[in-house]
Image 1: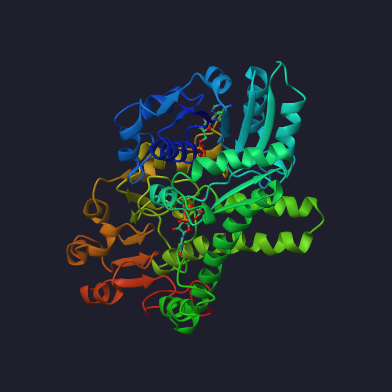
Image 2 (image 1 turned 45 degrees about the vertical axis):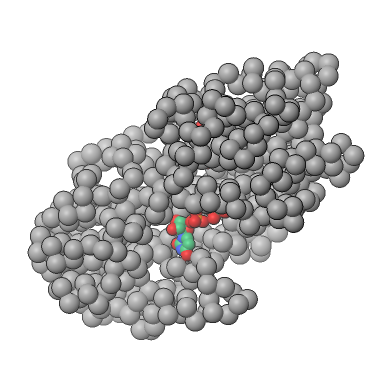
Length: 484
Ligand code: UDX
Ligand code: ADP
């Protein structure tokens, strides 16, 4: 083995990324570390802690050969040449910047640990998304805490662009890899070392190098642009419902412009996931701190539209069900923040379910990948609490009004309405007649992902709402002047 890599943090980013490096580079020993013993035990078991298509094959092929999972953080970091930091950077829930700024406690803890145990030169790589200028803070923590002779650090920023559900594909075939570093002789040498790792499977022209700050900001900017695109099409969906236009047709028309492109134009009940909202709020916080108030407001509006979209959906369900959902069974199909993942972080389902629970509804939830425990925990947590694994959580009582079902048909039986919140493929081929026959009439479908064939649903007898589609006359638009 020529190079030893350690990665602090065995989460959604650290686990798959390190598995791909170990899989592609037979001359590198990669150890993924975490303080969470349960998580490491799962990585070492047959049932990995995260669901990601293709991940098992990659992990099982190299685990125990070039890939290791361990809780011996200090020992493995001390032995490593390159240390990736991939710990969580939750949005602060209290103190200065609460609701916007990133909480850097885990980061600083990792940096101080590296300083304490290092006896040799190391390259430190920021992997998780961090606020701009984090590298500088890490450099300061490290350089002021070098305890041992021989320790010296070069800091690199190497943001991860993988999307969940396609992580393995994205890692195997990335659009680009970005490596930012100091433009000094030792910084450039560190950049080259990391470049050589990726060059074992990524074409050189796709490995972009830059200064540290560009690399850090590029990650926030990429997520902000992607989220902005969804809020843009979602804002158009609201306009479509009012005008009789169809958002899918609009997306097709505007996506045909090669400058706009067809991807990422699916209107939805809102974007979720661990990155978009967090990164935008973080950018808003940075802008405010730099006196860029207008720019902060511009980016914050992306989150405002996202929240509005979820609220709009809840409002149309309630107003269409004759302005009351109290005591009514409502089937929720899909809880994950998108298909092909079991991840529920910031999923729009949480806000939609909470909106309906607040009105006294009884929810029957079905998701092929999300466990009952996960759903109930999510619905009990306060905003941003999900990303603070080691803090005391409040628990709201949700048991009485949530039923978790192991099939779509069980969830829909006896329900007044069906809400589709995740675009799982299996929802495209539902037996609508069977569902309709088992429901209370009039039976409603509220399709927040446009996966159901609306024409067929109406033929079967449903009152059908498709997000951003012309409104069915039987639906009640909560904001219309004629609404009761
Ligand atoms: C995102 C970025 O894509 C990735 O590059 C970054 O590293 C992490 O954040 P991820 O959160 O895994 O990845 O999922 P993504 O596929 O981007 O979807 C985010 C959310 O947007 C999901 O809730 C998805 O349903 C929603 N979405 C996406 C839409 O509503 N419409 C679309 O057209 C695309
Ligand atoms: P991401 O989506 O960015 O990968 P996750 O929350 O899934 O984030 O994973 C981050 C992981 O980092 C968690 O499993 C957490 O236990 C771990 N972690 C946080 N701080 C430390 C630390 N100081 N040392 C080792 N692991 C840590």
